[in-house]
Image (cartoon, rainbow, N blue to C red; front, side):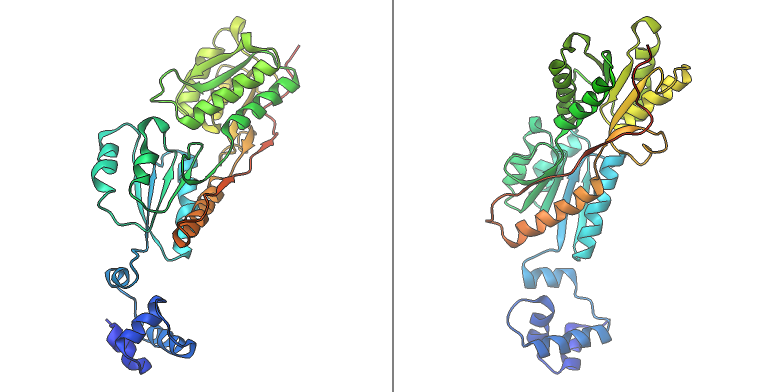
Length: 335
C-alpha cells in the first residue's frame, strides 16, 4: 500500500508539500499540486481518513438522523442525501430510530455529543422532544428536513397547503362528505407534518362551510393503516363518505384497496386523493399532491455544504415544490 512518502518521492517534493497539495490546505503552486495529484493517481494512493481528519480538522462524515426508513418517503429522501454526499466524497452515518424510544434518547444524550461530524441533517424532527434544540448545542452545521425547523436551514413542503389543495379538489368536484384517513388523537403517533395535513383538511372544509361533515379516521400512515380505517368508514352504506383524503399516498392506496374489496367502485362511488406521489401512485391511478423526497435530500446536502463553508451565513429555507396531479381516482359524486 502506497504512503504519502511514496507520493512525495514520486513527485519530487517533501511529505509536507505532498500533504498540503492533496488536502487543499496551505499554499502549493498549481504545477506542483498537479504533479502530486498525478503521482497519487499513479500509485493508487488513498489518504487514510484519520490522517485527513488530523490535517484538515474535518472527518468527511455527515450524521443523518431520521425515522426508520421503512416508509417510501424516508427511503427516497435518504437516497437523495446519499447520492449527493457521495459526489462530495463525504461518508454518511445513519441513525434511523423511531421517536420516543430509549435508543433514540441515548443517541441524543450519549452518542451524538461524542461523535465528530462535519455536519448533521435531521429529518422529521418532532418539536415535543426538543431534539433540534439539543442538536444546536452540539454546535455543528445543521440542516433539517420537514415542517419543524426552528433555528436551522431547512427544506420542506407546506403540509397544510398540500392537504388543503387535495381537499379543495374534491370540493370543486362537488363532494360534501369528505373523510380524512390518517389522523390520530395520540400526539405520540401523529407526526408534526401529518398534524399540519389534518389542519389543511379542516381549513378547506371550513372555507367551504362543510365543517359539520368533517370526519377524521385514525390510522397509521401506511397501506395497512389506510386499509383498516377505510374498511370501518365504508362498511355502512348509509354513513359512507363520497370521498377520502389520505394523510399520504400509502394511506390513500390502502383505502382504495379496501373500497375495491368491498365492491365500491373508484371513482364512480368513491373518490380518493393522496399526498406525496408515491412510486405506486400511478399504478393505482391515484390523484395526489406530488413532491420529490429524493430532490429534497439533495437540496438538504446543498444547504449543509453551504453551512459548513460559511457557518455564520444567514439561515436558508427552501420550499420544495408540490403540485396537484389529477389521475382517475377522483370524479364528481354520483347523483
